[in-house]
Amino acid sequence: MRPAAVRLVRLGRVPYAELLALQDRWLRRLQAEPGNKTGSENEAGVLLLCEPAGPVYTAGLRGGLTPEEATRLRALGAEVRATGRGGLATFHGPGQLLCHPVLDLRRLGLRLRTHVAALEACAVRLCELQGLPGARARPPPYTGVWLGERKICAIGVRCGRHITSHGQAVNCSTDLTWFEHIVPCGLVGTGVTSLSEELQRHVSVDEVIPSFLEAFKYTYKCTLISEDSPN
Image (cartoon, rainbow, N blue to C red; front, side):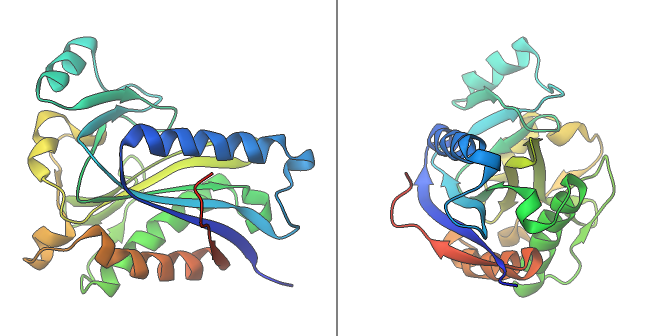
């Protein structure tokens, strides 16, 4: 049996709103297919990759930001958005790899919990490939990937009718001071870190994408098909 195929769309550095708009188009495409079938029998969806062009604070289904906090964050020059993902508030910005898999989990033989575990495994493997063997996933409410008490990868997903959206954010060379204005993911007493911070050198988003794609293919047991057009 052939492995499932996943389309790969690399957006580069784009506004966060552009990523959400493309994600919504893919969601509608997958949901509109009869029986949620994609273009071919073994296609499972798309992997959207980007680096946010500007600072954005996002709140999840559980909230995480009061109107007063949102006003304060906008005054810093950041965008503030409510999203449909799980979890509380977090930050996205330049120097961060955003990975949004829009997938029909049935095509991959996964359930939501195993999908989240697979995202964590991808980030752990990415850290290992970058020379950080101490990265670990932790159980809820500490979903994500950690180096000690410092989170390096945040994960928040949404799933409806077996189709996922949103995903994970890996801090590569992110300006970590943006996280000081919130309680990331509602976890008091924990910190955040980045690949650059841990390795004591600049690690760009472009540098880590090949390692991430290797980890994604291995973890999801799929092939990736590059898309020429994001549409």
